[in-house]
Length: 411
Image (tube, rainbow, N blue to C red; front, side, top):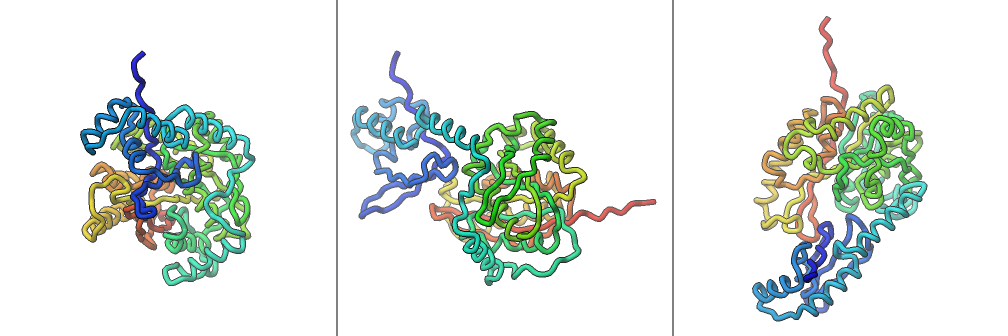
């Protein structure tokens, strides 16, 4: 047997250039899978080698490329030593990484509930923070008295609270004042996008404000109609923040209410339909139909935790972050938000994929699914915003609410 290809660099890792004691280094973060929770610092050679590992190159190929591109002589032994170090730290798609994934999936399957992970602090501290977002200058104002204007759903961000907290309050004030549902279908984003369009969990979601109970009856109905495949890749819930942030805000918005949730993470539907409408993919349609059926007759509300554009170098764009880029992003977002306000799932999908999703809208599938389940509801956009990504990018997000569309019945 000849030389073997070197294992590939894990595509979901985030790499940030950094100056450490006057030297250029690279910080590696595993925000998405969290196979490791600490920061790993790579010196320049390790970073260069890592960027060349695509699962096909051998040591000699990497050596040759470094020589050609950087005019630096490195031995294959040095390259293989770097690769062993990267493997040891779970930075590559290697046997050690796969074993860690299996171990973590096994640990997750044994847990009685999905642990609180991304929101730290006591109930008092977290309540204080969220109250501050509502009452602050950028927030929606303190939650007021109950209003008899029913809503059928909301759309809120899933960006971290430090950057987007005030924007969440516009959707959740509407929910707190206008919604008495006892069931919330929470649609988050499976950022790792496993090959399962809708990843369901039957586990409760723990939060600092108390446990959010998952509706076993609805989950059982989904399983009966669709089979065990609804749980395929269930461990993505462990390391995903988008549904957890909604669970926390739900507990804050309705602290005394008895309600259950159905937490569902949506993968990128393009895996099943390309740029065509997801309505052409049975894998998506079957689940939407099953959800509709399972919540039929229940006092249910749809909650989508989604962000929109992700633009800039950290998201793979070869562009500068300037006013021109921001205006282009805002123009695309405005078109998309208009289709959301119209409750038009197909128009929203097309507004994003028509240019090949150049804005990297991570909430594309979950927003589409929410609009389909809301069934042509009338939307209202309450707030739009964007925030910098410290690694070199911009992320946009919004808050919206939906009211059941009044239908005129002709006698």
